[in-house]
Structure formats: structure tokens, C-alpha cells
Amino acid sequence: MNEYKIFIVEDDPWYGEILTYHLSLNPEFEISRFTKAKDCLSNLARKPSLITLDYSLPDLSGKEVLKKILEFDASIPVIIISGQEDIATAVELLKMGATDYLIKNDNTKDLLWNAINRIRENQSLKKEVEQLREELGLKYEFSNAITGNSPAIKKILTLLEKAVRTNINVSITGETGTGKEVVAKAIHYHSDRRKKPFVAINMAAIPKELIESELFGHEKGAFTGSVGRKIGKFEEANKGTVFLDEIAEMDLNLQSKLLRVLQERELVRVGGNETVKLDVRVIIATHKNLAEEVKKGHFREDLYYRIIGLPIELPPLRERGSDILVLAKHFLEEFVKTNRMASLCITQGAKDRLMKYPFPGNVRELKAAIELAVVMSNGKEIFADDFSFHAVSTNSMFMTEEKTLKQYNIDIIAHVLKRCDNNVVKAAEKLDIGKSTIYKMIQDKEINN
Image (tube, rainbow, N blue to C red):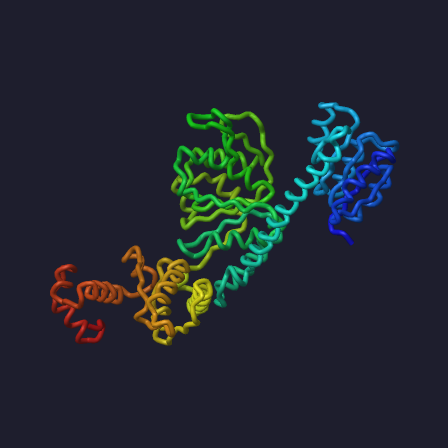
């Protein structure tokens, strides 16, 4: 059975024979001819790859047939072939969904051949895109995207299962580096919108004066430098999902415009008048407490209730227990495979060090630490000394766990002493404390020197 099925609907036997012969020159084409529209329509279940449709048929008009074909399956390309050069009719049929409109003349068979080749190329590209999206779906399988066995992660997985059942908006909160965008993608690629676009926007990364245009698009001449129409991120995401990262950074004035777009499910590009209908799912993320931002007057209350939807709070890595080791193994295997390296193992001492470190940068920091440790290792095993942690903030390191004031003091003194190469006098000067205090901690084994 040939792969590419073409239906030719033509009531003129002679002309239908010409088209059939011409297209049959390609052995990949399976041609079926119909002289009546109803015969074609009754065979649509055979799933034709393309239909050529004579505009003037004895039983139904070209418009009626086109409408019924597209109602059955809007993805079937339909090429109208007409004996009359009527521009108004051609435009109307193309607006209805026809793929092309050809006039019957000496060049028709060649034009048809070229049109079919173009359509096949586009169908092939669409198929590739769908395959890539399927692969992305596998990549973002919940078990792949959210690695871990801790109770906190099991709770997250339960919420994700609920999130994909409907198109409810989702709000993801959590510290920086906990994987908010990964979770958003996992939701999208498991939803019924997975074959449509996933468009991510970091609200904190776009200059204030450009963000409205970036979100909603603009028309030519809308402002200085706008030399053409620009489609905004929301329009790009139509039928799919838009992910608004760091939503709390959005300007209050723009918040009101976003609220209107979400309420009306439509937008108007900057500098334009045309209304664009929208069907998008919104997933937002922030490391801030949005409810607190509302109380402070930094975030609109009405927008808050519009976007909060299903809240998912991602736990920091330090609260996930042995997930640290599960993730470490996952990142190790991933890095080794990507770089075509021999397998390595993590020694018990290295594991102990990972479990004691608070990971202020969360999963993102763990991934970076593992990759660096692989590079610094002897190529066979990863030892504790192969790890180098580069916390951005000293305060964040000390404030990530609940400890007594005494223990915080010990941690701070030990940290400064290490930075001073264990020089007690120098460390005491930096901390503005007596050196005897440090010596006593060393003597009592509260600090290792």
C-alpha cells in the first residue's frame, strides 16, 4: 500500500484522467478518483493525505464540500481547482481553510505537482516537530523531571498528576534553583496542550519599557524602531502554555493589562486595533511570597486570585534528605554519558559531605557541584575533597538550617578561620573577638583546626 493517499474529486472524466495519470508518475502516490462529492465524503475514513477538489460539482458546491472535509479533519490539505478565475471566491475559500486555489489551464498539472510537493514538505516538518515534542514529553516524564523519593517530592508528584487533568492555572513557588521551570514543562508536556507551544518568559530579565511589547506584540510604527509587526509571547503560546517566571517582578501598570488579557481571553498588540483571541494556559513562578507582596501593595490582589490556581510549593534541597544522593547519582550519570567518560562512583566520605552541606543554591547548585567534582576527580572515584562549593551568600549558608545561636556562632567562626588559613589571630581580628575565644572552641573540639 502506498503511503501518500491523494483523492481527486473531478466530474470531468477527461480532466480527471489527466490529473490521475500525471500524479501517478510518482510511485509514492496512491490515487483515488471521485466524480461526485458525496462519494469522496463517504471515503474520508480512509484518511487521505491530500484532496484536490473541483469547485463545480454536480451534487454539492465547492464551498459545501470544503466545509464538510474540514469538519471531518481540519488537517487534511485541500487544493481547489476551478474553471473560473474569480479572485473573491478564491480569497473566501482560502479563508475557510483551503490550502491552495488553482485555475484550470495548460499549466495546472505542473502547478498542482509543485503545490503537492510543498504541502508534503510542510507535513514532513510538522511531523518532525510533533516527534520532537513527543521526545520532550518523554524527557519531562514526571519520574525523569522530578527525581527523588522523599515525602516532599511524592507530594509534589501527586499535585502534578492533578494539574494535568484540567487546564487550571498553576502557581509554582520555591527558592531559586529548586526547578520551577522544569516542573512547568513537565505539566505542559503531560497535558492535552503538549502538541502546542510552551513559551517561557522571565519577567525579571526584560527591561520595563519593552515588556508589554514582548508579552503582547506590537504593530509596525507603534514606537520608534518598530519597523514591522511583532508577535508577542502570548500569541506565540496560543493553544499552548505560557510560563511567566518571576511574576512578582512585574510592574503594577502592566499587571492591570495582564489581568485584562486573562479576563477577556484576548489581546490587542501595542499600536494596533485588531483583537486577537487567546486560548492559553498560564503557569506562573516566583521565589517570593505573592500573598505577602499583595499585602505590601506590590502585587494586585485581583490578579493574584486570577493566577494563583493550583499552588505547588517546591521544597528546598536541604529538606529532601536522601534525595540529595539520588540526584547526585542522576547528575553524575548524565554528565559522564554526555562527555563519553568512564563510570565513576561517589565515595562514602563524599556522600557524607553532600548530606551535610545546606545547598543554598538547591538542585541547580548540586548539579554544578557534581559536574565540577567529576572534572576534579581521579577519573575513578569522587572523594570529599573533589567538591568545591561556591555559595553566593555567606548568610544564606548559615541561615538555611534551624540551629541554636551558639551553633551559628561556631559555624561563623569556623568559616572565617578556614578563610584565614587557620590563622587564629587574623580570624579574631576580622571577627572583632578575643583570640582566646577561638582557642577555647578549638580546645573543646567545637572547631577543628
